[in-house]
Length: 639
Image (cartoon, rainbow, N blue to C red; front, side, top):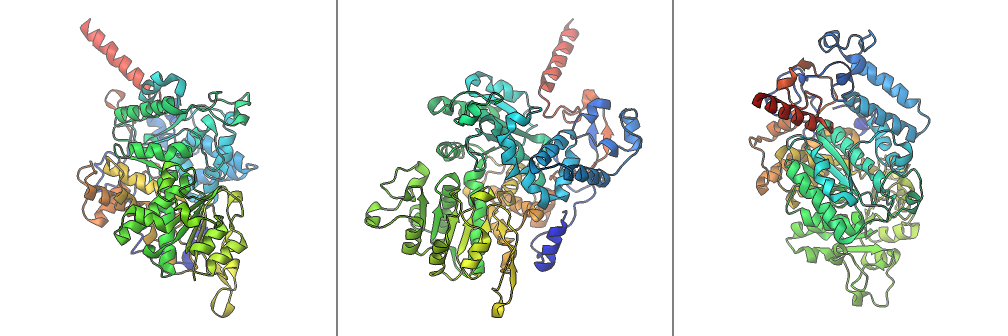
């Protein structure tokens, strides 16, 4: 595991417990592992059946100037590369200098996209070495700007574009991406609710691309075994509809039966074509996200990061905060400001956890949670979406009372306050002080993205509560200093980023490796517990409530371990031979996590080679060529 200088500084202040997080390096890619026989093993050489320019144009084979002299002769590269042979570290240094020379964050994002299309190992090695610095470039907030500018920055397509007006082509278009065993992880979006910036139409494909990059970076999902998909259903974004350069369907969003049939055609085709794949729904609109998840979840291994991922990582932060403040989840009273997909997803996860801990019904547990949106507190008189209904309060109990955020806090005295509203500065000093009056250590999580939409900034929250608030945010913030130590001494409090990336990649990794047939509630609970148990704040209350992205691969191993154990217990793990010992299971997981290292290339003959060795993975048209060759051979043998 690579540790950045920033993280090493934090490590000196808040040392990790190595009995909890195993960080021993994976054995050399040349060495033999006990699990090197596994299909996803990352030990030993990589078979390669291509050479010359074809090899250099294949991102998962190409290593540019790092090809050894032997590889250059063996694979016919001697006239295609400069004479100097460099190491991956030297290449990373040069790439970082090129990255740093870009004038702004969007230009840096574009540079990284170009690098990914050329050399997978170098791209992920650069990100891994500079993760803290580059995370906001490859994801929020810069990826949001890239998505908004998709049609203007477009150079070459990446991913599968499915058209709602051509439903008859869905199965055909998906089938071009590989054989049943080729795809492990699919991220699909309809682009309606992207990263707090709303409807971005076909540009939403980049959120699918970005999420898959994070699964590789954070959990070692093999990058050449993933598929980003966008369902182009039109857009209600007038700016895009009036833009001559817009590349998506120039029509209003399709709703209703036609939309549902389109989504169902995609899911059915994806499951038939890639039966081992895990489907990750991303950034669907409020009216569709939960409905789609609830419909398919009992049937297939699927996940919605906005509903479940946000809920899981937030619950982990809440559990850590409650532990630090010596409060119990069973006694929690939580107010959520912003009752959209994320807010309701968080409410669901917390409700389920309370119900489990108290052994009560979910309906009873929901009474401990108050949702507030634009109309105020959600009551039985409010127009509600299905997901909101269970949390609606009896309107008769609020007759004659104000239902604003401040009024609700004064009435119910919550100990947890969540912001998913995208209303900047909504958590005012009056609101925060009112909350702090009735709870010694309030847990306050302003989670809206990007940063400019945060309900409050940590500095204010800590100042208004005299350093008592336990804070995590939706975007990264610098540590906050204040006179909150013993006898008024100055202390520095690190702010946790409530980042889904510490949980969703590990959940996906566990589901993929166990070949889970479903993603159950207990598998999600196991993921939450794994993250909460690794909270640095459990040992030092000035440390973050959650582990940071710098440590995310080790966290993903622990999350995947919990998910796999739960899958086995639930009877949904289809993979055979999963180790029963925890330490051995973690080795089994690590062996199958892709790492950005140059493994030796082993020459094999095309006729007997795998599709990966023939550089055909994620190459549309390669299946067609193979089938044509087989057909021609059959005809020739008959003749």
